[in-house]
Length: 496
Picture 1 (spheres, rainbow, N blue to C red):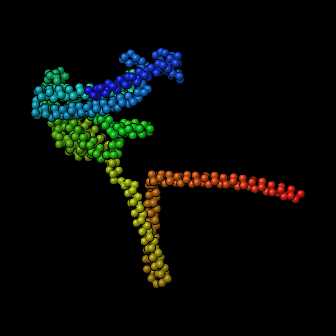
Picture 2: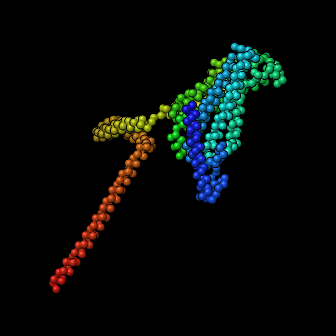
Picture 3: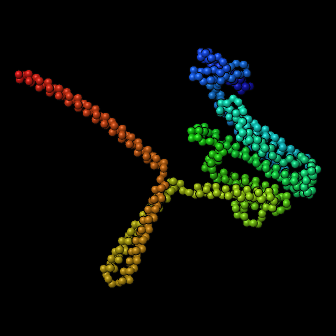
């Protein structure tokens, strides 16, 4: 009751403020000589007037920016809540479909009250999902009207939005419906009348092969409802909820889409994000493959074999021990191979990033390598000097020509090692100089510019002080010349 009273009080205050604004606009219109539906201000711009339910004229909500911000905040919270409920309803429908497909041939028979109950729950969840999708887009259209300060909701209904809403409703409305049909209705659809007690779905033996294929397709297409995951991740992400992110993003013309949020998640939690996606995709694809292959009574109809086939296909290994037999299973394996290549590329990129050295580690590593190469260069230079001395001593002795040739070969080898180490050190320093820390260089440049500015200001102050002293010297010279002129004039008068 207190909340309702507070809301009534707030609404009354807002109405009073809007009435005061309307009266002020009406008074300004009389001063300008215009008193009609479209008010004209001093600049000649037309101001629209809305009419409230009480029949009083109201000006635009110039002072209602806070009201619009509050309404926008409530709409965003409603969108987030509706998206969460829609995702939960979609997952509930998928889980009921999986439960229905797994329990029907084993626990209860097709056409029983249990099968009709579970299928009724699937249809009920589908209806709730459609209502939630419509409510979500209704809130989205209201948010569009508030953001763009529009009055007519039909402005927001563009062709792309209408197409997107229609496609979402069609995708969310897909669910298996053959359980509601009578077995004799399958005879009208054509096909061979084969009784299949081990059908992949909860259908009686009177349903024909066409019905089985249609029901299989509808069950597999229910996984398309998982597109709601990206919307839920976007609406619940800290990037969208943070005012700092939105402010800085608006200044840099960044659109906060699911692609941006996915990039942020891959940068912050790459291993966790990939692991969750791979595990979920592995289990979903394995069950879909089992659903497709179970109808043909083949080896891949088991869950363990389906998991193995999806794993080796995802990793692009393909041992060839098992393979899909149905067209549906081949499509699932083909999609799994494509996703496996993409995920493997992302996994390699993540592992490379994890194993790479950071800036500090690179600096330490290259510094220690430089020290080690410097030591080896000093030893090589000492070996060159030693071999030169030994060669000179054998040259002076002129006794053993074999020892002389041996020291020549040792000298040439020492020179080669010395040159090789110098070249290696030069390459290492060139590679290290290319990896300069830009932030550190920026700080150094900022310090240099600050020192230059301070030196410039100091030099400017000194120049100003020198100018002042020169002015004082000029004034003193002028007064001295005047005094000398007066003294000379007095002496001339005394002399006369």
